[in-house]
Amino acid sequence: MVEKALFAIFMEGLFIKNFLIIQFLGLCSFLGVTKDTKSAAGMSGAVIFVMTMASIVSYVIYTFVLIPLDLQFLRLISFIVVIAALVQLVEFVVRKNIPSLYRSLGIYLPLITTNCAVLGVVLLNVMNEFSFMQSLVFGISAGLGYTIVMVMMSSIREKTTILPVPSAMRGLPQAFLIAAMLSMAFVNYFKVIPL
Amino acid sequence: MSMPILLIQSMATLGGLALAIGVMLIVASKKFKVDVNPLVEEVNEILPGVNCGACGYAGCADFAEHVVEDNAPLTGCPVGGFDVAKEIGGILGQEVSEGEAEYPYVRCEGGVHCVDRFNYEGIEDCKAVMMLSEGEKGCNYGCMGRGACVRACPFDAIHIGDDRLPKINKNLCTSCGLCIESCPNDILVFAKESEKVHVVCMSHDKGKTVKAVCENGCIGCKLCEKACPVDAVHVTKFLAEIDQEKCISCGKCVEKCPQGCIEMR
Image 1 (cartoon, each protein chain N blue to C red):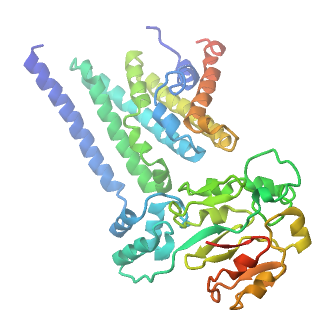
Image 2 (image 1 turned 135 degrees about the vertical axis):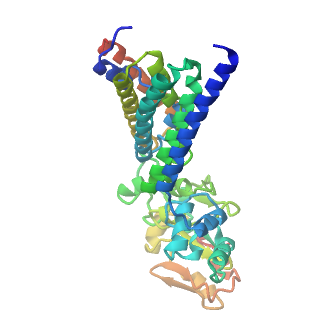
Image 3 (image 1 turned 90 degrees about the vertical axis):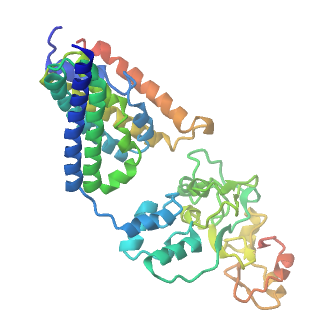
């Protein structure tokens, strides 16, 4: 496999392979926490942290524990354990330092544990045979890509709530239409940035 | 690699991983421990948990915290009412005295009976209409029927009726008062359960002006004042007001009113 430049990987995570609207991972939080920008940004911060940390820790565990022991088939379960522990850690920190955010995120904070986007990052790291730096960059860029889309989506949804939309289309149907249009915009990055 | 060795290796790896993570989490939970007053949890359990914000705090959990630690009033939760206040008092060791239940009622009978000055096309909200020269209605005091209260009600207890006036469903209403706050014209007011007779008009305009724009508005004719046997009705500034302490709910003013703007409920 050809070594990819770090910048290319960064752009991929940010736009071309955007986890939310190109790969359709982590849609639960995408539709659940985007009702207001503040909690969307808070959630994104937590996800950036978890994704980056998960990339680092999973790389270490995979390269220095699982490969030497020839136990690669254990990667799924061990990654899930790592992610769950990291989410617990984030929950402790957020609860201690930002109690208002802790309350507004509510159920969605522990749901990062089951957030397939985080597991997606670490599995893609392994599948692409990324080096340590590459994994780190991919983790960060995936988190940032998640943030961009979450903030965009929440600002659009905040503004569209006051529009005179037929009641049948209010709420989730409207959100899905917005998501569809957003992802169409992002699909264009395939051509704009030829990597 | 033979099967038993593989098995042992896998178990040891995952076990070691789990052990390391477990130790890390225990340390973290000690370090980031949040002291929660157990009373707050207890109070929070009792609260209705609808997070309507009628108490003035961010939600039920926030209210519980302020009740326990910050001297918020025990009766602060209008949704829970007296029962909840009493239970909170029980937990905190304080006495609560009971007040009478209050419900909002609509002080306007205009709606479709009140003429429009112009055709409004825009955001469907009372405050937005208000910004356009005091609203589209001929009467500056009346209900605009654009449903600010309907959207403010977290319990789905208010609906705009066929006459373009809000109708309050008493069975669903928890007297949280959010609709009253949301109304830009102060049409909605609280009234006690025992207060039966109400003037359903807010207009201080002269009789002639009222008659020109609204079929149901108070014209200040003073017929109700004369009809009242206990001197409970008074017309001030062309609007009848009922002194609820004197009122005996005989209904004579209701019969006499030519505009039908005094109502018995």
